[in-house]
Length: 345
Picture 1 (spheres, rainbow, N blue to C red):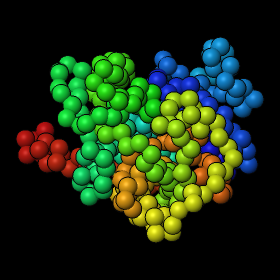
Picture 2: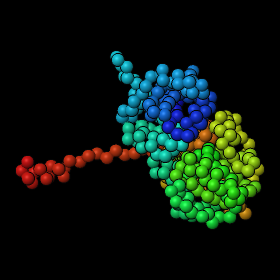
Picture 3: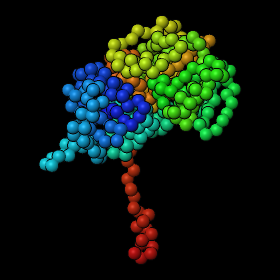
Picture 4: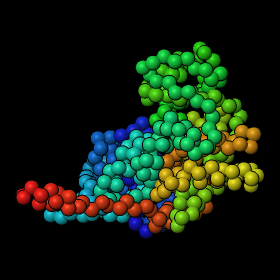
């Protein structure tokens, strides 16, 4: 199978996307892969497979690679004497801004390029943690209490300590702090506001059971990964999540009752259906007193959560054959012709 992996982007998670792409080169070695890198200046580069190493990007050597542009249905490489098109299915592997905020989805839709990844509306509700809370309310899915704080206004937090402070539009635990008392609050807010003008405050529940579940829809059916109970101390900080992005070995199933697994799968299906078709997502859940609470939606999980699937390559192939199609509207000039005829023009 042919697949183009799109990675990079102008985001705080730029380096994480590179690590994810390098990992998928190994996991999808049976595919015919092309790699397209989006740099921080929003230029596309076709990257040779042999050059897929971290230092190649940090050194700026990627700029020696051919630049690409977009045309209807494909990435295009133009030379003085020829034009080559890359019209394979694209796997959107850009984490954070550009990739998960709907920018790339809109661009690929505009050029009618088939892709694996969240569509624009799904990106809106998963990239911004405030809107994820609104989605939970709309779908009657439990989530922990929260308060929204903005950088340009002062607001007292009513949630009792300890609390967790997190930027509204950022992943990988960047800018996240656990605040145990009033003295630690200002520093945590300053840190979070460095990354976003809006932040969320939530109760920090020490020792809460946390489970990760990934999945996708193909042939009208949701296909689930195994359920993982991530190893953690107080919470999964950036360093631990960064290591997750390079994971390629399948993890062990969580040792939990089938009844809890079914509840997790039910909540995942509620979240996914009617919004995330065409994408492989990972949901992070809390379980409190046998009740399932959504923590976060990862619309483009690190390394596509390959470590949660028994046969990741087959999953990607199956998903690529079940992508939604956006029907192009055909312009109808009949109304204009009627007006012109009525005016005698």
